[in-house]
Length: 524
Image (cartoon, rainbow, N blue to C red; front, side, top):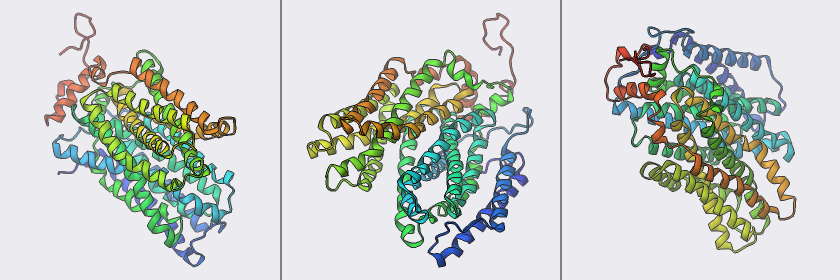
């Protein structure tokens, strides 16, 4: 497949200079980690040497230079904005493959947190309360990253935002060499920002780069399977590498993957719709539009659905393994439950993709919300010490339901919003879902200490999901109808031309005046 034009990076020399600087700084940290082999790779409280500070400075400067290089110059008009490459079936397959790889790398970051905590706790002599700050800080970073990344996608472009997130991934791999717990928390917050910023942008770019029809099924499968792949990749690396060199190596082991992602940047073209909007100076809509008509109902429905998932996943399921083990259920270790959840994501997401495409987007979301609610109510009825077959079935259905919900929410959000605020909307939905990691665990922990314990917690988690499913059923938007939005009609026509491999019509790249009749339609 021919490469995309180099002009897609406005300042290529500056970009690769920044990448080289970042790699040099990261490489110095890798060498310091290797040099700690005589101490069993324990770097706690070694102190920050002058060389380490210089390496950190190189990383910061390198990321800033490369980030600046990928952003189009202010006021770039049609002449300065690169035209989208000819869209062919091979191009689309390459785009799907590269963005799926990007999402898998993105999902590996939070998944790794579960595997590094035991070793980190032992090396730094941390209490349970102290180590709990690690996921809290990392998830808070993803919330900020989703909001900033989603908004950036609508302002500087989908492609530029993906590359900036990749650069942050590259720089923050030095988390594995931090000699203090405070330094690790800072790096995890920045890494969380990169992870949160990547997710909504990928869905926006997929929506605007693939033709209708099977696009929704591809996106749902991509969302679910990359989540599973990211977790399994992190688990596999942990199983092989931690016994050899300890927990720190898990961050450095992801360095080659990030470098590959940056090297594949030529196969990530800018969105044709975003390029057309930039040429015509259209699509600059304030973020507050999410909460103004006609978007208000959409935003409330999407927010409720994402928030309900966050409460179940980050709150209830977080405590489920320990509650099962405390009840005396043999063979139901935390590792077993996590493995079951990731394994069941595969058939669950396949079914969700088929239903989403062949039946109904809204209906599929309601079905998976109902499945989650049913599983929670069964757990509330039987308790942790109930019938073993019933208990195991309820746990399996709970994992299947939540896997389907998270696979659906991103693609659905990207499809129902106008192009001008698609990235912002996706970032908002992702941030709301991740916010469950901040308030979900303390809320469920408080309920567990009250009468009823896990039964009451199951009911508490089921209620918001039931309300969210009902909101989707009665007030949710239909992606098919959303595709016919008048404000997106012109851009959709341009995208159709690009998908068929035709050149972008010159007469469509400049603003047109309203028709003489004043009815608001565009002049030919």
